[in-house]
Image (cartoon, rainbow, N blue to C red; front, top):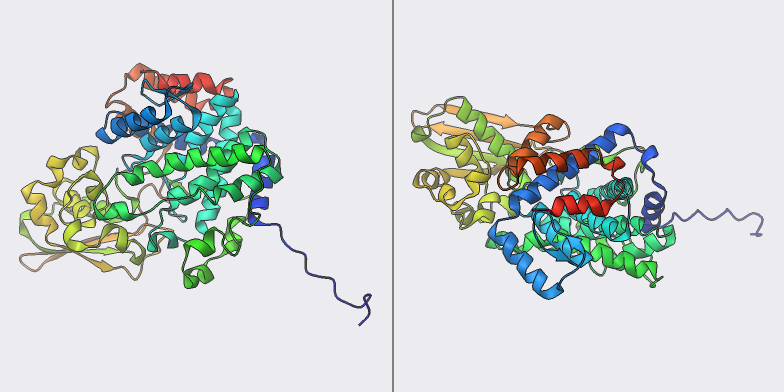
Length: 472
């Protein structure tokens, strides 16, 4: 066949990292609908309140002391703490503070926490580079949009093999955030993602014993992203197919069957026209999002007047994809040894909801989850797979209670509160923020921070914003 008659070769699509890089480099606030910009600022406000709530916790003071001893003094501030650290180390601590109480937002379909890595990366980088609040805001938006899509590719499958997507995906998203603030070219931003592939980490073994390592994942992702972007700024040669390559993120972190079931097109789908920021859920409970459906169902039964002294048995219907995290091993989940055990326990979420009608920060104190009546109620909780669940689009939950006289009381939550289809209002987010700040922050400062976050486009200096967050 002559060359003239041969069909033209199919065009080769740019690598996923290149497409995300071009998006992140070109995005402007004028391109983003005002409602999405507003939503981004409320996500930032929520994470900031979570950080203030955590700043005096034992895990916070101990991890901060360790990092400060390693890093030494630096110019960057830490939210609500007197520490001043080098840029990357400040990002580590800020991520830990935002995520440490497990009260931070979740991108539902991606099953990942994005703000707690991208915001620390944005804050530290913007303050270091002399950026404005508007520049910090658009970098954060770009990072969340990219990170959400990268997580959506696997639909929660990272959890099934023991990886924590908040640490994995957060590293790539943070590389884009930091690189955008460094004014990297699209080629350099693509390289930053290739470099991030060697830094991305996060393991779920903490679920076995309630250890503290999960709390470090998002801040480590932020610092790793900053490192990757800095190397890329110096044109450090990097892998070109960070995600889809033979040893890229998805093939190296998923079994073959799970990789075959993933949809790589979701990594770049509808960039700039569909805003994944709208699909980020803000938590009403300081616990793993996987328990929220059953917690809400149990609270509804409490409100209906259920007598917990008359309960014979309890069934919790949960999605198959959450079993490893919050339901197994059953005996361990019925006996939380610490707050993190309690945050990842279906039996505890159900028992607290049924008996107390709430699952707040006070319910994560040791006295709450070792109360004899709660222990007895947890022993009656068994789980079943909810075949009708729409997880991960919705973190569903159903609680079915059989009373001693044989009567059955049940409640199903098909769409959990905070989900994008049933979001917390801006007023509810502000109320949560002020409740968190009230634990250990003067109200006048909480007001000043609130006003700066919600008017971030007008803040001329990100360093000034950081200083306000760090004053104590």
